[in-house]
Image 1 (cartoon, rainbow, N blue to C red):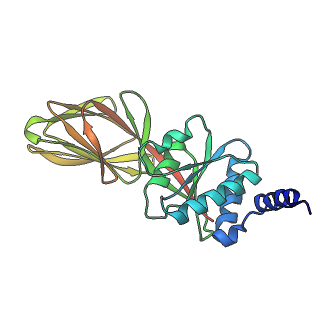
Image 2 (image 1 turned 90 degrees about the horizontal axis):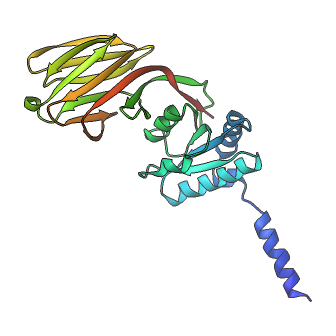
Image 3 (image 1 turned 90 degrees about the vertical axis):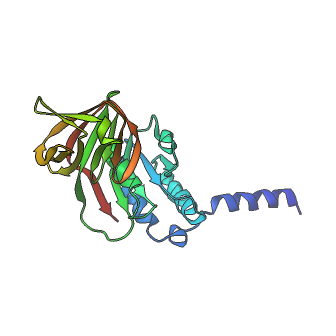
Length: 242
């Protein structure tokens, strides 16, 4: 008996045998089909996953299913810097393995202008309005529900809002922006300025005289000084349940 040959054949058999996607998680095959269809041989798929063992197993199985369909896939997490793994990839679809309660897959899909596929349901695609954001560097980001700019100390801060070429300066001012179809709904107020609400397709916000805090979807990004432009992106996020 050639035990070496038998061992080699056994090892090959182990490598060739992959678990049934339904055994790993039922929705994986449908998600792979939908994401591969969106990629259509012209893009990659971003798989957003958690850090637990089950999520890693599902992401690995999905990546293998996409590879069988000739589609490249990259796993990303909510960890800082994880999105850098997508650099150089033309992402056509995002598969959400994190869960409906997480902002990250939706923000990534809107930022990349790629459809987001959720497990379960088989509902019709849904479009959601989002806010495009661009700082002085011009690099684009997005917000899903709202963005606010607030002074750290109203006594030492000031903002100027420019809409349709007209500037309005408010000492100690704070602003909240929400998406509303082809326009943004803007609420502006200050210690000595009566609150007003108006709409605009695009606004530029400039800060002066002290640090401000930029808050996106209830998540403070960082201390903020300078300028940022907000733009309405109607149905800038596309969601499909599979």
